[in-house]
Length: 447
View 1 (tube, one colour):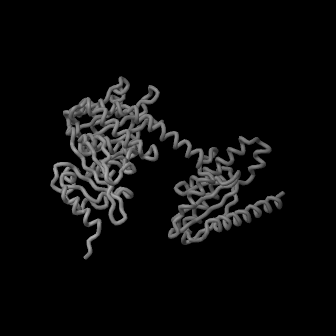
View 2 (cartoon, rainbow, N blue to C red):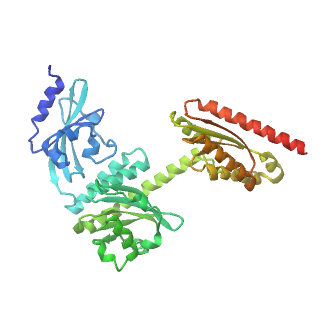
View 3 (cartoon, rainbow, N blue to C red):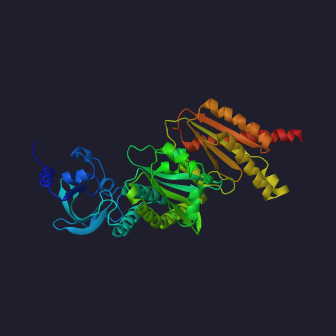
């Protein structure tokens, strides 16, 4: 078999297999790792080159979910080396990087030789490492395209850096509970997020007293709080938590939650607490960005009166219809809206629209609901059977009478979603119009 340029370059890489420096090779365009020498594999817990295949360089080397914001790939040139110094928390080392560009068989490769210039371990040389760790964590988090992903990346980074089993965020809710909103778990650790969606704040009241003084909570051995804080003990013990550090999340002098890590080296707990408090300022900023984005999304995709989706949301949902699933459409027109507005004022008209939307939510709440016009609503149901659709339509009719919110209804059902959505909506709209005309004709006869 004829050897290719790639085969020749691979031979060069094999020269570095037993080198005492770290060597990585990755595809510049796809970020896929194609080679790591023995030392690199050992540091990252990989046994063979087969385990390297298919992995992204930023996942393995930086512990990130996406390409690094400061990636230097575009600075690389053939025949010259680009040098930089960075700290890699995944392996706990400060490295001098020497990078160059190699090309073979139409592909571009990043060749990186990393020289260890600061083997601190994960938590050595505390004060010098603080700044490096924090800056690197923020850099990786800020490389994410959305605030949600920034938070997820930061939790992953914190969890890995502290060699913990879990990293998480709890946020205060308005009903007196706190909710586990983000969670990272090490391999083999069972997630707990779903079990921690409504924790009464009173359970961690002692924690909040510490938070109010600007302090973190440090538990070196959970058995030590069995008698002094039994409520917390009852939550922590079933999660197999032996130790933890949690720090407050404070915004505008108000505690809005806390975040922390579980099951970590006991001798570093106080140092970890200090670092978490420092990172908390950044975390508050990202949470604010997230809330702003959510608010903007609500304004763009939610009807401000009823709280259900608007036309933009409807178009998004229609674009995601899966052709293999059954589909049901219910088109609704609120009866008597103009009369309510003219005789009782627009406030009464708004109340009528809200009552109508609540009828639909009670019977179709798990499906997609939209307000598509002044007095028109659309319900989009994927994966619903024809029998179930008919049953729920009848329940809506009963609910309308009880709620004093009459609507004309038109519905269609198909065994799959291959027909044009516009055609289905038009058919449901026509049936709704027929029912509306029939309603008015009956009303005229009564008069």
